[in-house]
Image (cartoon, rainbow, N blue to C red):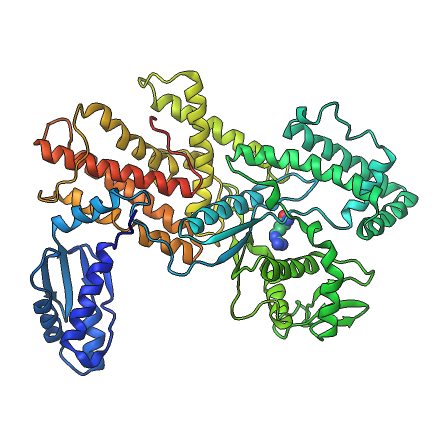
Length: 589
Ligand code: ARG
C-alpha cells in the first residue's frame, strides 16, 4: 500500500521549482495550477509574480518552460496570452500514475498529515416522536462525513444526541404510571418499528388529552418532571420504557436507510444530566452567565430580538429547569475534556444556527473551547415540497420519513424492472436492487446540493436515469462490471507505452483527482464535492464507453487490455466513492 502523488501536484511542484530557479528572489511561489480545457492544466502564477517583481510575465514564463524541458512528464508546455502556461502531460505519465493507484487498496489516496479526533453529532431524533425529513438530512450527511473523515485517517467519535430529556416527559411518564400496561409487550423482539411508533403516538395523544382537561393530572405531571430530574428510580424506570420503545422505532428507520447506528454511540440529552448543575455553577461563578428575571442567562452584544432588546442564551430557567443549552454546553465539556476532541462537528438544521452560535461563544468564554478546539455547525437547509414550500402532506402535516422511503423504493422498483429486462434478474434480486437504488437516490439527492441550501424533494427526478442522480452513477458502475463478461479472456493490464484517445485521457486525468477531491470534501465538510466528482466521472466514463470500444469493433490486444484497465479503475473509484456516501453499487443493473 502506497499513497500516490497526483499528476496535478507533481506538475505543481515542478513548476514551483522551476519558478524559484528562474527567480530566486521570489522565494516559494504558487504556480496557481488548475485543470483546463485547452490543455491538461493551466498555470497563471507567472502573472502575479512578474507584476510583484516588476518583470515581464511572458519572459518569466519562457524561462520556466526552459527549466521544465526533458523527462517523461511533460508532452508540451507553451506560453500563452499575457504569460500563462498551457501544460500537457504525456500519456505515459497518466497511465503510469493510474497503474500505481490501481496497485493500492486505497487507490493511492494518502492519509491526512495530521489526523485528529472529531466528535460528530448527527442522527439525533427525539424520543416518543416521529422522525421527519430533517432527521433524514442529519443522518445522511452525518454518516457520509463519518466515512469521509475516517477514510482520511481521522479518529471519529459518533454521538447521537437524541432528544430524550425535558419537561415533555413529565406528562408521558405520569400517564404511563397511571396506565402501566399501555406499553406491555408479550415479547419485545416481536414489536416492529411501525408498531412501536404507533404505540407511542397513541400514548402521547391520550396523555395530552388528560393533561389538557384535568388540572390535577397537570400538577402530577409537573411533579413528575421534578422527580425525573432528581433521578427518582421508579420515574426513571418508566422513562426508560419510552426510550426503549423509541429505539425500536429509530432502529427500524435507520435499518431502512441502510445505516448502522450503534447503541454505544447513542448518548442523548439525558446522558449529560449529571453535569448540568456544575455547568451552570461554573458559568455563574466565572460571571459568564448572570441572573436575569430569575433565570441564568448569557448575553451577547450582537444578538438582539426584533424589539432591539438583547436575546440571551438561557442556561437555567426561572423555575430551576435546565434546557437544551445547558445540555449542549455540558456535552462540549464532555467531548473536549473526556473524549479529547480537536473538532466538534454538529450536523444540525440551519434553523438552529443561532443556538449554536451562542453555545459556542459561551463555551469559549468559559474556556471549554480554546484555540486548540474547533467547533463547527454543518448547518443544513430545509427540505421543500415540489411547490417550493417546506415539505408537508396534503393535510398540512409533517411528512413521515418512513412513508417517503417506502415510496422511493417503490418508484425505484419500476425503474429497475424496466431497465433490467433481459438481464434475467429474479424477483428477489429486483427487490434488492430497488432498495439499493431507491434509498441511494434519496441519500444522493440529499448529499448532492451543498448542505446549507434548501432542496426540493422530487422523487421523479431522484430516480431518473438522466442527470445528476445516484441511479446514473450506479448504471455507470454496472457497465464497468458488465464489460468483463463480454471481454472474453482479456484482462485489465496497464500499457503506458500506448497513445491515448482523447476520451481516455480525460477519464484518466479525472480518475487521478480522487484523493484531492476527498481531501477537499473532508476539510470543508462538503460531501457534495464528492458527489459532483462521481457524477463527472460517470459521464466521462460514458463518453469513453461510446468512443473507445473494448469488444466490438475489436481493437488490438494491448489497447483492449488498457481500456479494461481504465474500466476497472473507474469501477473501483465509483464504488469506493459511493460507499463513502453510504450508497450501494450493484454489480448488475
Ligand atoms: N434532537 C434535535 C432535533 O430533533 C437535534 C439535536 C442536535 N444536536 C445537538 N447537540 N443539539 O432538532
